Length: 357
Image 1 (cartoon, one colour):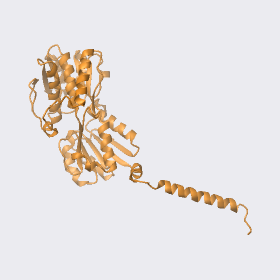
Image 2: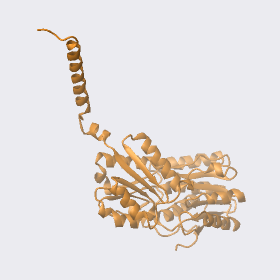
Image 3: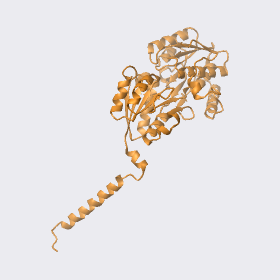
Image 4: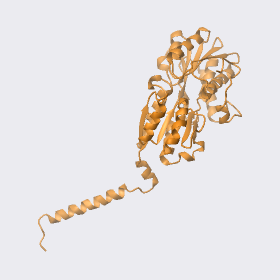
């Protein structure tokens, strides 16, 4: 048979491409569910209560979500600042319509919007950050046991005060804020039964001017250590200005208060967000008990900021010992109370001075 010049080469190349095509086809076919799952995209939205630059609640949510996205190549993340308020339901609808399968609603204030929208989009999961109850079959809750670190911060405050008057700027009387105040007060009482914690309410999560005014009021009344449970760093600004010992809340803001900073109560949202995202992506979200993620010191979801040089070595050791006891379950801050009991707390410890609205 007469062979056309170059035919052998053409046949060889044809065979080569056919083999490579088969290799690609075989390589593309998933060998199991895990391989297939790792290639599927998951669109996740993070809805923030306030601005990322609040140096607290929203900032740490932004950091946690960013860290989660960096370690999960399948995660397609979108973030919306200042999404709370009357526009929240429509913002949620827009994300759900555009294929977002998980919406992290990062504030207690998103509760009404979730209740309104979740049933309209049963294929989208709505997670209520700071929530207290399951609002729909496709809705869950997540939070961090920040009260564990607030107890430790109370030990620091109780030891560092000289006037036995400690100031506490509080945003709103939600369960997590009240739990935090009481836990802080328990920490103070454990080492200084004479000290009192004076609470002033701001009336909003993020209002720097009111937060600063409340802090100045507490300092002027004689509080020589001050902390807060609010979103901005305005309390720290007031403390730095007045030369008053300061314990930050939400984030480590030592860089803004170098002369008065003792330590800080810090959120670390990455562990929770990572586990929630993986559960949704792997199809195991519905199997998680109550669709309720509530992590603490043991899981790394909360932490104490590094001590400044103002904190004596013996006090550092005491706090570290107490932290270890909490992690190991040897120290229970609210003994005999379930998570449901904690979320229903609406009273102050005896050493707290202030009204519950």
